[in-house]
Image (cartoon, rainbow, N blue to C red; front, side, top):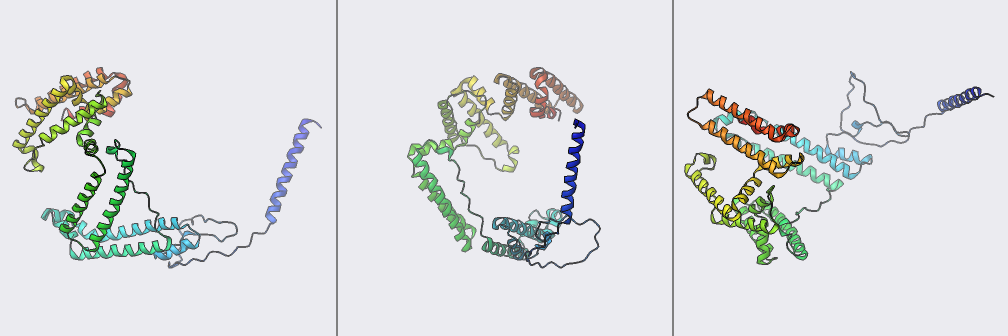
Length: 419
């Protein structure tokens, strides 16, 4: 037999085998349906003319077709029963019910608030506190309390059937400002913190049960905080506690966030101590009205005086070059520029040069805006000229390779020069 005849004979045999298998499958009887799962629902069945194809049904061999509406019920507890009846895990049932209950009560709360929200601008025009008065109206407040109690009852009933979510370990942090103490003391601090958190929860529950007023609540919570602080402090020596307070201070955070600033760990710590000593000796002035601090000339004068003393203090400690590096390293603009310079494989000095160009341009634009000798049209032309010259100088400094990245990540200020 030649090769072609052999191939044709093989193909014919394969086709005959496939035909036989298909014929045998067609003659096999369909399996008899087994007993299904019985569920209860309070939905009313209605016969409607279908205008679109019915959704595909999931069919498992040996079971009747299953549709989700067989389980649906507007009664949360009945819906829970139906889910458990089909073997849905308790954890999944709990997640489904919690989401449904939250959605329903959120919608009902919106409906209660709708009248007050509908008159939002009307009430704001009459009295800025009127909307708050509407929300706190006795009738609305009572309805909201009833809604909250109903939700609590449903949640309790769900938990009674499927249990509550397992408690997760409480995150109490890594105690970054206590990493200098021994492991034993750190463990004692963790244990103390957990106990205080539990005690705080119990105290809050007691105050709620007693319906304590604001004065009583504040007094009890303040007493609890003072006791907690005293017990925590007793775990450490004076030196250990002082070091933790230094590490947790705003001055230490400022030092840790410096960028492009070269110093040893000992020098950084000494700088934080120095900043903290200055802050203690020269507290920030307080304006008469915090909302209008910019209009308070006396406050602004005191703020400027303090800033001059701060500059003098740091310059005496760090020197002219050191103070310039400190000022630059604490400037958020420099943080962005330094990150960009490193992406472009440029040294820190390059980012410092870009910042100097930006600072000079912004100062020139400020002086132009505040000039009383320029007419409006002349001022606009001058600002346009400043922007054009700044962009030309910056583009030459950054280079064609990094100019696009500069505009995307650090160039927003250029558009503000002409405003």
